[in-house]
Image (cartoon, rainbow, N blue to C red; front, side, top):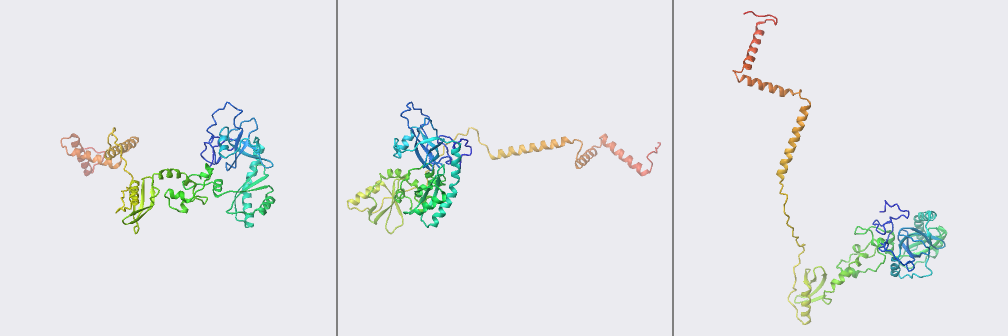
Length: 437
């Protein structure tokens, strides 16, 4: 999945955040203030948001240069004892909103700066460093396994100049990796930084396809990971099935929080003290709430059947229970499992009806015309050649017609010639002899 038609020098599609492939820059932000000019250049934002490693990590840098950097450009920024190369993700007034969201001070003196626009030498060194990351990941996992450490190295990010490497790992508890850092420093000859991340952050860095058929939300647009517990599934009347509710990270899906506010708003109209209802047959226990049909389902003891009740019926029975009255039965309502039938619109037949028989008759006629045309063309190419059976049949018909008419001159002449020839053959005369009368 990538921009195969991308031709920009920065490796991005330069679509101003509208790229739908997701591989140019993950966690991208659409700059909806990019085309709005600002007259006051002094009060404009001098901070630029730069993304690294295809958007898996972002940071803010001061733009002390008088040069304007547009989205997608590669810039060289200050790193640890060197420089790093990243892609400009946001610039302009929208950066202030992002800094306010992450609680970053714009006037922080410790904020790193942009050095220059990345040149060919910087880009070449960055590519060399990125080519070493896969081998470093395999080797780092092997070293951690040798030390029997309960941790997993999920990603290795090497700085563009190759002087620093950041190892992202996952661990359930506290890990003593002092010996591990020494081995990493001697093995890779870089400054080592260990950074612990969660399971959702790992899924965001690796990426993948979710059960919805789309890319993971954590790797495309979701940056703020909120806690998800089983009560969210209970509010939405979902069965507590860990296999279906868990994502690729092994935790509950983040999308369970997306519709939670809608369910909470709809549940405000339901009575909160109606978990049980007292009736003559016993105590009815609440099973589930259907916010789409405004129904509450109850079950009675010693019965597997569920009874749907409207909100008004539940409130009525609850008021009777407060007065000490137990109704005989639950006032259930009918629930139609089928969808309402759609009314088909009536269309006026302006063209007219066409039956299948008329279509077949037209097709048969067209085929007969084509067949006769082909026969005519084949007969027209060779007019002198007639099939022998047809010629014999025509001669026989002509002879029969001549015999049937005795007054026909041609028929009498044919008979006389035939008799004369037979007499000649019987007399044994030669062809040259003549008979005198």
